[in-house]
Amino acid sequence: MTHLSLSVVAGLTELPGRKSGQFGFTLVELIIVIVLAGILGAVAVPRLFDQRNFGAVAYSDQVRGLIRYGQKLAIAQNRNVFVRLDGASAALCFDAACAQRVLPAAGGNSGSSATLQRCGNSTAWACEGVPSGLSITAYSTFYFDASGEPFLASSSQSLPTQTIVIAGDGLNHNVVVTTQTGYVY
Image 1 (cartoon, rainbow, N blue to C red):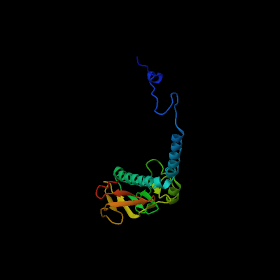
Image 2 (cartoon, rainbow, N blue to C red; image 1 turned 135 degrees about the vertical axis):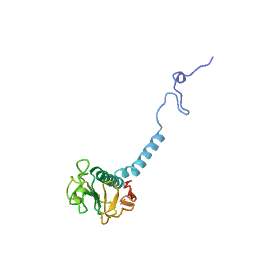
Image 3 (tube, rainbow, N blue to C red; image 1 turned 135 degrees about the horizontal axis):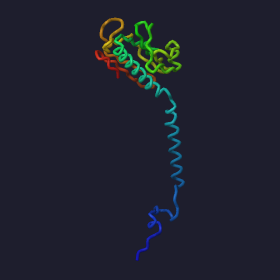
Image 4 (cartoon, one colour; image 1 turned 120 degrees about the horizontal axis):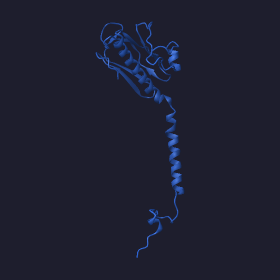
């Protein structure tokens, strides 16, 4: 006749090297977990609070969206929409001098301190200022015609493919406007 231990019958198996009825962690296991948590806290957590890592990506997404909006607006309203990249901001206007400002799609721009400072203290303009710590390559103004094709503002020549570089976190983030189609990626 075979005798089964109570722990096997109840569905519990005993761990090797432990007395029956002992469960939990050893002191060595607890110390290892605490040391690993300390290393993770010292290395990973400070990176989460460094806004420069996220700022360049976020701003490049804003610029990309702003330029796409300008192209779609030019097609929808059957008129030219100018994109101004002056190194301090990215803005949309209905004329090359930016006297006629384009209203933002959501009713207001981001309203950040950099945007207010670099966009005439206005939230009612499709304009985004470059946040501090970031830089953007400045190109001459270009525009989208009613068909969505980009042209140089200084002449009626088709805009060659432009790569707008946004830097600030040790990496370059590109916003590309293609020639002929005006596709922005």
